[in-house]
Length: 306
Image (cartoon, rainbow, N blue to C red; front, side, top):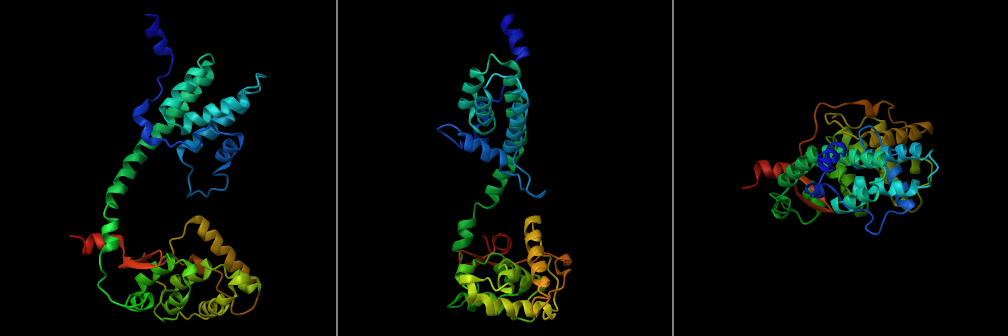
C-alpha cells in the first residue's frame, strides 16, 4: 500500500528507452564554464534558429534554481549540474542524479518534468531525423555517379550548366578554391541577379569599399567589377528567390548599407535589392561539394537513380 502511494506521488521519469535522444557533452562532469556556455548558447539566436528543447529546458531549470536558491543552502552549482544531467545526459546518469536529490522533492520533480518535456519534444524530431537519414541514404551513390557532361576542369563543366545550376554552385562555393569559376558565372548576362548578389555579399565587400581587404586584395578587382554590374543593372533576369536565413539577410543588409554609405561607385547598389522575393526557387541539376561537381541529390533521385 505504501509503495503504491509513493508511486502515485512521485512522477515517473522517462526511462532508458529514450537514450537515443541524448548525447553526452561532459562525460567527466560539467564544469561551471560548460554550464555557463550551455545556458548562453542561443542568446543571439534569430527567430528562425529555435533553440533545441534540451537548451530551452536547461535554461528554464537554471532560472528556476536561481530563484530557488534564495534559500541559503549553498547548493546552486550542484543543482545546475543536476539540471544539466536531466536535460543532456543518458538515463543512467539521470537515474543517479534523481537518487541524489530524493530528499528534495520539489527539485526532483522539477528535474523529472524537464526530462519529460525534452523527451516529448525530441521524440517526434527523432522520427523526422530517421526519415531524413532514409531520404539521404543513397547520397554516396549519387556522389559516385558519373556526370552526363564532360570537361577537364570545373570551369569547363560549369560552362555547360544553366542559371539554376550556377546559383547552386555559388551558394555552395568555398572561396579558398579561388574565384575564376564564379567570375565566369557572374559575367554571363543571363546569370540571375540573385546569384550575383549572393556572390558579392558572401565576400563581405565592405572590406574592399573601406580599403581594408588585407590579404584578400587579389579579389578586389573581381569584387569591384561585380558590384559595378549590380549597380548598373547588368542582370535583366531576377527570377530566383534568395531564400536567405534571417541571419544571412541581416548580414547582407549590413554589407549593402556599408557599401552605399560610401556614396561612391561601384558601391551604390539599390537599397531595396534584397527585398525582391523572386518568382521561384532554383531547381539545380548539379551541385558542388568540397570543390567536386556532382549531381544534385534531389535531381539524381528523381531522374537518374535506378
